[in-house]
Length: 193
Image (tube, rainbow, N blue to C red):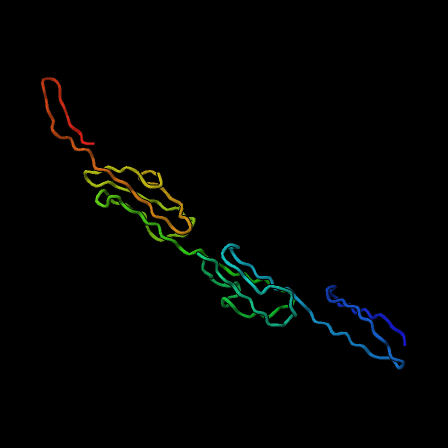
């Protein structure tokens, strides 16, 4: 009995395998079976929106599960093939790329007047993270705008941060002149501090 090396090669180099066989005295027939494989690629868009799984190299025609999970503060919005958050795909010849899309959850910008009777504020609401929003403060009669908690002008834009924010417009009472007193050419006023 002699030992021969039988090399089996498919058109795809990753399918090559080498086997040692013992050929019996009367001869033998050996059949090589090949299965075509292809790569499934799964992608998160944007990449910080969540995680995806199920990518890899599989047999063409097989059914493979792909899945997407949103990170904290994000929402899964769909796969590029329209499938559910976790679903099966059939591996096509030549492979395929599936993209899971995520959207950042909106956050709240709260604007507050301090004290509440000192004036009015506007610009609070629910916004997309990273957007620019205008906030504004207007003093009531007898009050003066003293500044925003973020140091911004009376009307200014803020960039919406993840997690939202609370911004306070501070107001102070307008000074009231009391006890005007005139003595000759001198006029005396009292201004409370």
